[in-house]
Amino acid sequence: MTETTIYAIEHIARTPGVRGGVPCVAGTRISVGDVVVASDAGWEAAAIAQEFGLTLAQVYAALAYFHDHPDDIRRQLSDDADTANALLEKAGAYGSGGHARIASVGQGGGADLTTEQVAAELGVTPSRVRQLILDGTLPAVKRGGVWFVSAGDVDRARGRPGPGYPKGRPRSAGPGD
Image 1: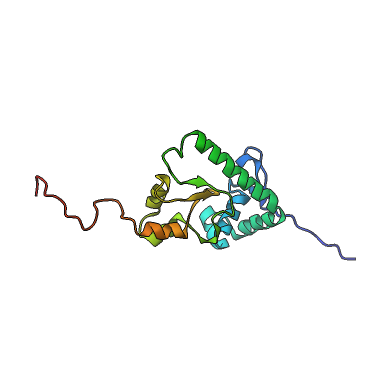
Image 2: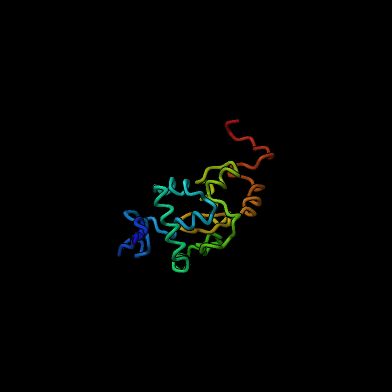
């Protein structure tokens, strides 16, 4: 009779003291949840691997682990978002009317864009997009360490003037003119 060998997912580990003991890609601080968030945002496995410095095997192992334990991973992501929002609220991070919030996976739908995608759409740098998010000008949510902006908010931001002097208004002559 032939014996079947069943292989465990060898790329995933829980290490006490690393990311609160949540399942991570072995030897890294990249949690399974981080990979899931990127995948849910529409990133392809190769892009996830490149962004997080992982191999494709590690990315697929994280996704396989998630599919074996979806409720646990979604609960961890939701708990992480709740904890982060409570700490930010306590620190007064939202006191100035800012719209940046930490959100759980599944909020915002598939039309969410990363800061890099928003930057390309608006013709600005990713750091300018992050600045707009943090000062509350551009509503966004943070999932798994990545900021996401809805496509509708990007469309609304497209019509706003950028930094600097408003276009179409003449500058007054200064002492050196």
